[in-house]
Amino acid sequence: EPIIDKNVFEKVQELRKERKRKYNTNDGKEKSREFFTKKVYCRHCGWAYTKKRRNGELFWRCHKQGTTADECRTPPQADSVLRQAFIKMFNTLKQNSRVVIHETLLQLQALKVKANGGKDEIAEIDRELVTLSEQNKIYSELFAQQVLDEVSYYAHTDKLKNKMTELRSRRLKIVNDDEDENCMERLRKLERIVSDREFMTEFDESLFNDITECIYVEENGELTFVLYCGFELKVCMEDGL
Image (tube, rainbow, N blue to C red; front, side, top):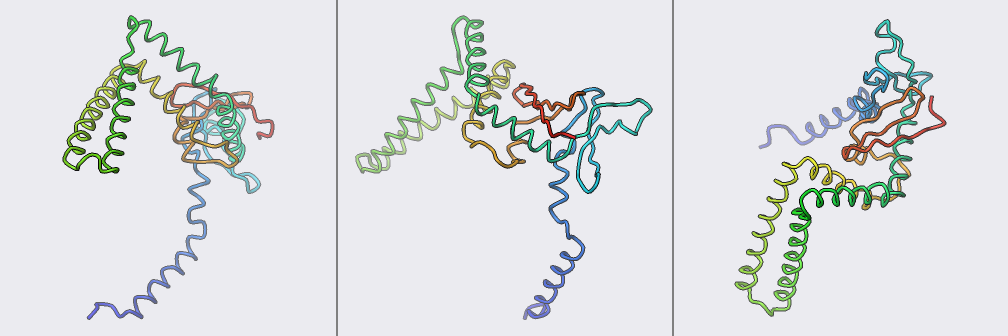
């Protein structure tokens, strides 16, 4: 026999839902409103921006304002303006990604190859990985067509996969040990993300977290987005507070 009667259990669940509706009317909304906590900073004094409300609207201002005797004149920013500024920044970056990202990456790679006497180990590993991947695809097609038996198929593909794993591990070590390569790897990641995404019409929190380290509010009200790859992209929003 069950410990709790089914009817009693269902009534308890309904009561819990009712209490949740009653006492958590803003469930999930407050988290969204606080998204920019510890993500926005004052360029003038370096203090983080904190949330405030004015006439029912959520906005952010330098925490130093009203906290110390020193005056900070960096302007506040509406939450909605920060979101629109990110959309504008990303769309501009995507529209100019070839010049801003790809050309920068090519120049850095050329400088590194020159510094290493014409050798680019990462590029060589990437080319070898592409070749091995194509070979693996051919074996899979032959196996699907029953040209290769199961024993031969796994013998070939296991060998290829082990080699690919070894190459990826070596590639990762080079990237982690080389600051220049690490920087280029962050650029490659940004290039992939920008290429895979469509132009934005609505703010995307996950995309912001994937590419943006923080935002600096300048004294003139402009917003500077600091990306993980090291780029600092400035946006001017005429409708800021």
